[in-house]
Image 1 (cartoon, one colour):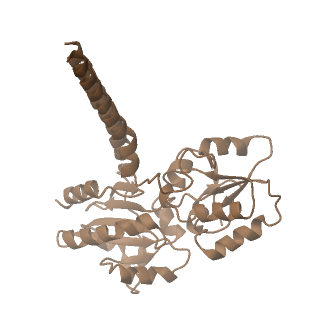
Image 2 (image 1 turned 30 degrees about the horizontal axis):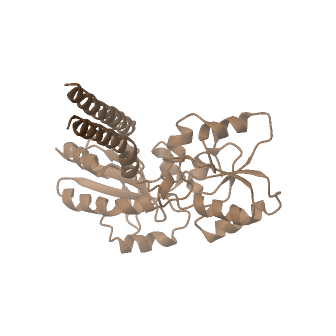
Image 3 (image 1 turned 90 degrees about the vertical axis):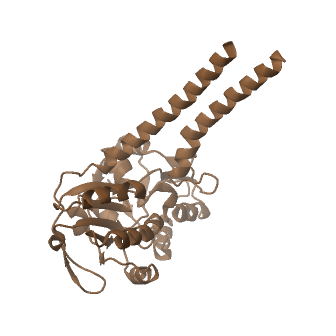
Length: 166
Length: 173
């Protein structure tokens, strides 16, 4: 009898801990509109590079990656990563064509970073088509800059270097 | 007695962790929403999709909700029906919604406007307009302007419509 009560108590403890974990980890992610089961390039996946890492790589003395911007022009014109090249919104076939042309002469092991930041990460219409295109073309060292909210919130407001212009 | 203590500690842990996280999230949201709370809204002369001139200074005395969006932006599209509903609900009390569309190409904009039966003026945006609002570096982004013509709140990303409506009601009083 005593042992059964112990087991019941421990079950209750585990249920409460599970509820706390759900409330703190799973529920906020769901309410932010993330759907980890269905979206690609999941936060934390190996294909992603964090803003801090990229900023460090761009400021280092060693070989820098080619940074390609695959979002809308209005955003690029206001602020973009220093040295980033404008490709255009990759949800548009015309911009995907620009991307293919831009990388055609690059060795397949070139270090390339794609970024957009037009919208919250899981809603971005541009970053996944661009990434898929480079994967399809055989590029093996492609990283995608993880901007959870937007370029403004996750890059500019954190003080990473930008430049303006077309 | 020992068992009761274990259960109480677990409940305390669960409640503490939940409220700790919840409060941090709420604080972050408050910080974002009030980032531009004291600036005067820029005075702009715009032209809507119907060719009508919109002088934002003519809305003095109203509560104005400016929404930067784009037809290709899926979270923006999720917000539009809620802006339409807010415009319907609070028009008589003095709410005016204005959409500023940041398209690279205008072709989809008119089709979107008709499809969603948008009941407030929409203008084609520009970098100049975006910069007048301090730079629009992500969509959607909305601003709530009080009757005194000052920006009272900024909503970067998807807006929390419960909070937004409460703020609109407070400003309309």
